[in-house]
Length: 147
Image 1 (cartoon, helix red, strand yellow):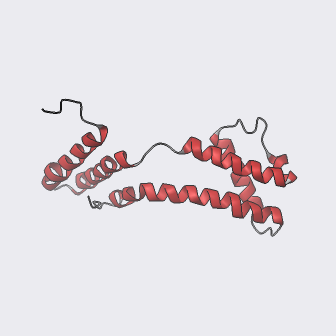
Image 2 (cartoon, helix red, strand yellow):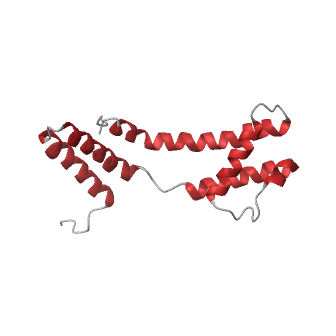
Image 3 (cartoon, one colour):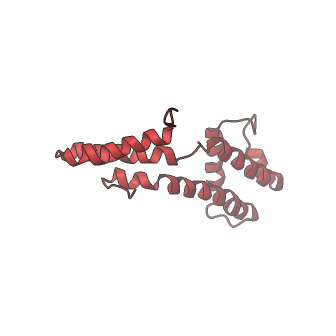
């Protein structure tokens, strides 16, 4: 019996990518149009692989890390903004910037803790972002990713 369900989002993205790769791209001679199409192919191939937005989870992890630091270091606790921890992601990242900037050139136990805990967490978040978005770098540089 034939499957009469609607196609999934992944199937739609794959169809779009394959059509652009096999039908449209070979017929484009204009360099700018080719570059734009390759970027669109990259986006179409990235979309089904990117997963859910990690922002809320990362903000929670970062707040937990800062809370742990604040429980051990009164100077950090004193820097927590009003309403903490019920603040938005931007305020959390602003505080991260302040804590990391203050730790530069400081060899105190507190500064070392900020670097070893908070910096490590933020680097892990960036590494995840780079891993997920790496295929876009190739396509935005004008190259097609392997299928």
